[in-house]
Amino acid sequence: MIKRLFLTVLAGVFIGAGVGMILYANIGGDTVTVFQDGLHLVLGISYGQASRLYNMALILSALFLARNYFGVGTLISALITGYFIDIVFEGLTLLHINTNIVGAFVIFMLGQTIYTMGLSILIRCQFGMNALDSLLYKVNELTKISYRKLRLIVDLLLTLFGYLLGGVVGLGTLISMVFTGVMIDWFSKIKFIKKII
Image (cartoon, rainbow, N blue to C red; front, top):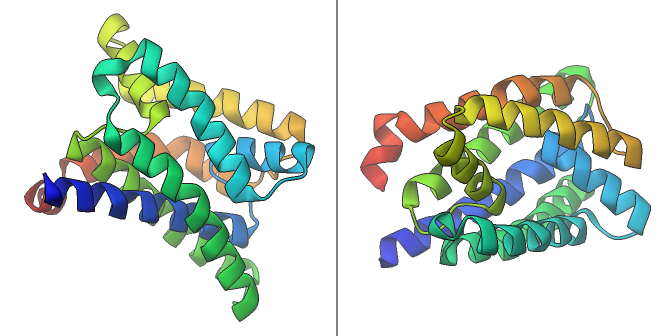
């Protein structure tokens, strides 16, 4: 239980760090980040605060609609993620890391990898996955529509609403829409992740 708790915290750190890197790359955030970016702009709050607001809304939904996938991990990841988004984004800004097109793409891909690895660890821990995945897995359970298809549909909707709110959409967003679900699924199945959990 202590190991799973530690890995849940680590997953929250990875998710936040990955999103912070994606934001810093500025070539279009992952789909959730585009939506949170829109919230951040419309409400005049930090990325981390927008993340916590988004997560709290989904947590309440998951608590009532997908309780069997809800757990301590859902709360831990939601609370930690927002802080590490701000820490990593502000840290990279202070360091003035190179953001030419090649540098930005490398930072984005590293962030995308860390982000999806964090999500897959959270799912594998079975200590309560993030609120969005809790809801998607519940829908999968009820409809038998694959997680990948559900994730793609939700990613398209989040991107659309985020864009309408002013979130940055670009090449990174397209990459994220196509590969986030695939990468989470892949990381969840590789032997290394299974072994540590």
